Amino acid sequence: MSKKRKVLLVFLCVFLLLVVPAGVAIFFLMPKFQVREFIEQEQVEYQEAMEYQAGDICYGNMFGCQDVEVTRVGEVDTGVLGCYQVTYVYSYQGKQLELKQAVEVVDTTPPTLTVSDNEIAYCPNGSIPNVTVNATDNYDGDLTNKIEKRFEGSEIVFEVTDSQHNTATVRKPAIQKDEEGPVITLNGDQEVYVLVHERYVELGASAVDNCDGDLTSEIVTSGEVNIDKEGEYTITYSVKDKSGNETTLTRKVYVYHKNVEVTPNGKSIYLTFDDGPSKYTSELLDVLAKYNVKATFFVTDQNLTKSYDDVIKRAYNEGHSIGLHTSSHSYSVYSSVDAYFNDLYAIQDKVKRITGYTSMLIRFPGGSSNTISKSYDNGTHIMSKLTQEVEKRGFKYVDWNVVSGDAGEVNTTAEVVSNVINALGNNNTYVVLQHDIKDFSVDAVESIIEFGLSHGYTFRAYTMSSPTVHHRVNN
Image (cartoon, rainbow, N blue to C red):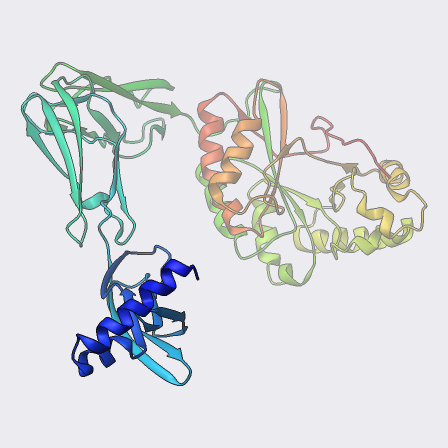
């Protein structure tokens, strides 16, 4: 301490003792907690980090003040709006002082409001069409459905207020314009298939406009369908809104005959079904009969097929081809040539008992290109042997060139239909692989037939004289 300061302090002490009353002097000289700075009320924003303010407190008198220890009692959760109390306890050599602080967690942040369009076109009737807007709030979350729209002069004002009364506003210039046509929705399918002489029912369409609302009654329908003549017909639906914007949509109607095998060549589809029969095969035969379509069934005698001998008999009597897919449908048949033929002859004998017919048409489990046989044949390249041996014994084996995907790749009717239809083109021979043990695949057959017949294909049953469809042998 400087000499000058010491002199000043001595003078002050003498002054207090001689001039100031004794009680007052003792008060100034007695040490105590000195509150130099302390905030009694504080606000913190929702979800912001809380910074606790203990203030500036010391212990001493006017001649000197010592640092004190500080502890805090109470927490503030800034994730929950409301009022909190925090107590600070100051300690010095056994003495304590408590000060209480009120903290309020508040939300003063307005929502974030975005409008995608820089300029908004509104309808001639004054309505504001759908505009891409969204609003999110740090406390309330998504407030998009709370956004309000209004006209103010040449502007459209978008505004949203959160639960804490914070408001966000976006203004966009507005012009009167309607360049968007109505939306037409067909009742029913866009492609309809009708057998010759069957009734065509026009299901119509509906129309909605962004400015004028429901315009269904304004739709003009044109085009005719001659159900007595095979061909492709177009029904056209047109509608205009009050601003003159026009929308047109068409429906294709295909009128076709039932399947008739009249040409030895041409585009042919061979529907083939493996692993059955099953509880779905009778339903499948009903669909085939409806369109006079013949198919090919490569049957088995595994557990799930044993109760359907009558279905095999029906399929044979209705003109479908009955092929052989081994009795057990177990890949263990590939353990040896003898194992394969023992199994094959077992299913051949069963088909003959049921139908009186000796089938020589076969399909290998997994097809001739399968590689799973490598797991059973001990390296003997069984498929190379079998593909030659079956032909030596008078059999004809059939693979496929259209994969429906029902063996595990897909599991819906729509996917099966799409896979088959998309594989068709202008070739003469399409052999489709399906499984009549899969209900969703059986359900796809009618749509496949309708598409094929209306696009110039003939459906045929595969026979010993049908074109050869073989895979490349991989074992």
